[in-house]
Image (cartoon, rainbow, N blue to C red; front, side, top):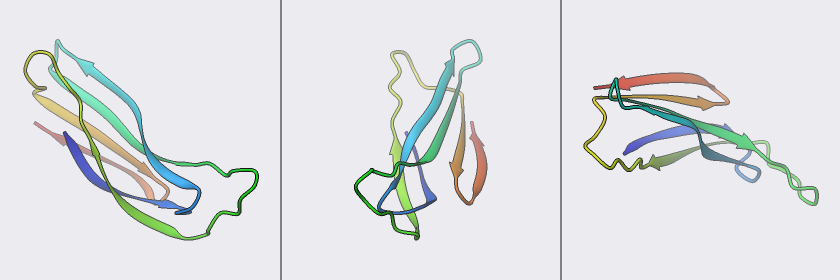
Length: 85
């Protein structure tokens, strides 16, 4: 499980989603990207605010857990990388 907080634009038209995620069984390494998205509905105006929201991503494994996890958070305030083993 990966938890964090991400800041992004427009609380009414933005959100958080899981980007790519890869598991290399030979290296025992999970690599994931948590990113923000902006989607403006054709019939709505979007707010111009910034919001910080918590996220939790769970990755099931059939056999054990990864030896290392590398997560990239891609928000509109920048990109941050964190690795834990």
